[in-house]
Length: 277
Image 1 (cartoon, rainbow, N blue to C red):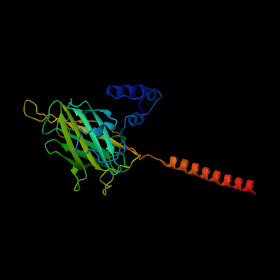
Image 2 (tube, rainbow, N blue to C red):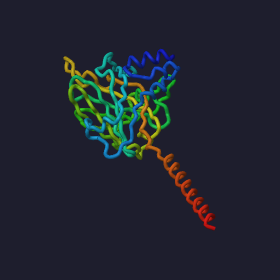
Image 3 (cartoon, rainbow, N blue to C red):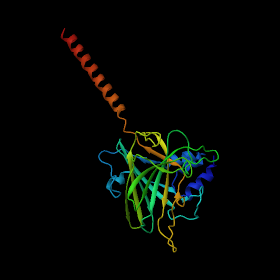
Image 4 (tube, helix red, strand yellow):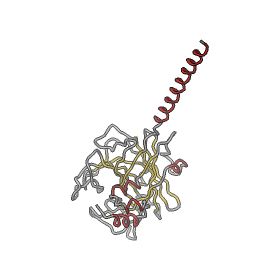
């Protein structure tokens, strides 16, 4: 566990606003992560899965996450273009939509982005589920998008060098670029028939999520600057599809009020009959 002051400095360097009181109180890193979780409110009507610029996205509170070079697997790079990204999400009880928004000075065919989730209850490292010290290897589900392909790809990995495309494809993606900014929307049903490969999203519960971005521009020698393991990544954070509103308390209150009113009505009738007699 990191001391509170270390967590505070680490979070501030990443450009994330966390309630200072929580950190001074000695919160764990997981609590700090949960405080800036991606929260997807439940909405009525169609999700804006095909329109990154839809007004509906304004109803989702953005969360900002720091990005850094991937250093666990060669080949590595020391600097990345994307230093942080903003994430919004919505769901309608059946489907979820998650939008990544980040600055990229140029639009390139090999620009790409991805989401990653743990699969099942087995803890996995954010580096493709690779077994690490104190972290057992486990399967991860990756949702991937590349500009020149213009579509979402559903993938799995369980360690470095094991990345593969699923035979079934449930993920979709739509992106828009304007004024030096990418907006990439991933969408998928909350649950699928492939629980052994796909993360299952249950409204009301927290799951782990991480991010990756590739700047596909070319350098002076004509080589792509960020490709494969050379990318900007985040560690695990939290994602939550909010549960539907619980109106049961109102129903109980209404039932109790109706019961009290009925009792009062019966009592008044009995009193009236007694007076008439």
